[in-house]
Length: 166
Image 1 (cartoon, rainbow, N blue to C red):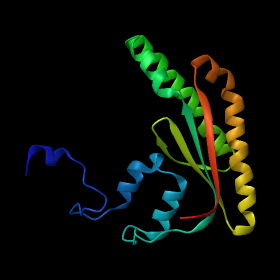
Image 2 (tube, rainbow, N blue to C red):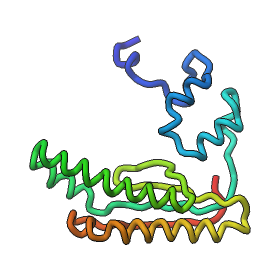
Image 3 (cartoon, rainbow, N blue to C red):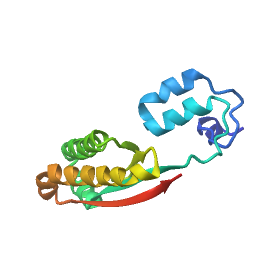
Image 4 (cartoon, rainbow, N blue to C red):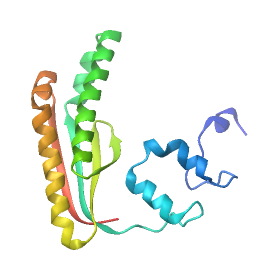
């Protein structure tokens, strides 16, 4: 085994040589979306992770457009600029997350300068409500961050999809 292999985390599809236990989940609980925690609880430690969960709801992606240029500008300012950028990230992603959670959504992941969230519905009949909640969260986040976005030279963009989820 090379030294770099010892430092590389094992891939999810590669056996680690040990069984997952509840302390593994507890260690990362605060970093996992509620949907994933529910799936772990339902399937148990030995559950078949290849089975797709199906449901209904809305998925919203909110992107901070212009973030790369903003980061480059702040990086040129050194430590002071990086600290300012950190505060901007905190304000933007904090507000987006707050509005997602307030609307009954769940942040699934951050992808670069974007947030992807799920607004679940318990049935097809409740799908439209999930879509409305996703739209409301995106609009509320946009309204709350409009002045900050203008001052930072960025814009918020949202894309929403509604229907069956997997």
